[in-house]
Length: 238
Length: 226
Image 1 (cartoon, one colour):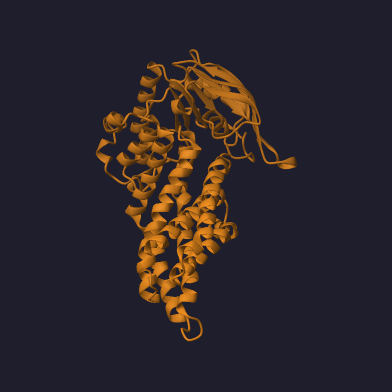
Image 2 (spheres, rainbow over the protein chains, first blue to last red):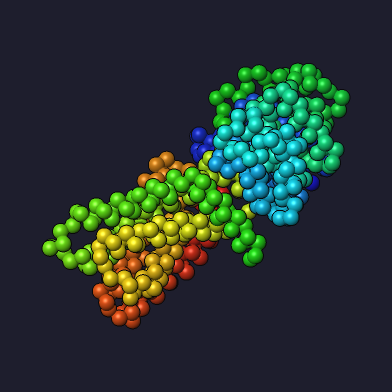
């Protein structure tokens, strides 16, 4: 459903060349959730952008079954228009993702209810708090019922209750056969959801394995040993 | 093709909705148009140069710089919350994105021109009654040409520093052919010359439009993809 084969990518030229992806390969099938942990500058965002088709890698190939229309993407920003209401934003993105016109409105309302922001539907996005805007961004990513979710630090700005609700939603999506790739620098986030875990360091997967019975504490310990607590300082942006 | 047009309309409708909700650029462009025409009206010496000789140039200088305001805002809308990134991840084709932006810009500039033309007639007292239809035709043809090129350059410069300045510097050389054509046709129309005298310029404007809309459509993906 989603595969990456020998992905390599670097930014800059000559002596200032920074490797963001170094021979990254993996594949995920329906129902799998890959949690990628890494420090700032490890290349997590670059990897997600390559998977989403935003960046063409220097080498290797990323394939998503169903193409761009099958991807739900949450980046560092909400991708929402501040002077449109939450509902107008969702209807716009639904139209771009070719959600049939007859069900766009009901789909938007249902998604807003799922995210607990139905009462904010007619509110302009610029007036939302950081956490509410993040929930709206998640709603935007889910509006077309994507088969693959690419999530870059999706818990940013969410309070504890909203984060728990989002985890529950991701678990339901996982149960429904969706593929989720979740990148974060915080090992405590999303471990419970992951079927597979990767540690990324300087563009390379230094660890990639099924989570198995490992809990958050054990994974955090392994992460510290594999990556090092101070790793990432002085590197390029994600 | 239907999908391309449907997606283009979705983008254009969103842009127009955003503009009519905020009205920032539209009001700025309208005020700018009125101010420039006012300045030219009071800043010229009617005894030195006949109004009819100066009017076509004034009209097109005003329309060109007012259009710059529209072109500048076209992709600035997409910088808010990195919406452009969302558009590029979505199945929206680059062609539809360009056509949508082009359509929204054309509507925006047409609105400014629709207000600017009566003001121009009012200030300069030029006889447009008998030539209104061909005058609207030349305005439409020239506008399509420079908005087509301007939309492309707007996407090209949007991630750069000093984007607004860079757009003007890059765009103006490309606007020379349609501007010369538009001024020549307008001068002949306002001077009461037969329409056949302007036929060659009309053909030039049409050729410019076809050529640059096609070229910009082909080149646009290279301006937005990383």
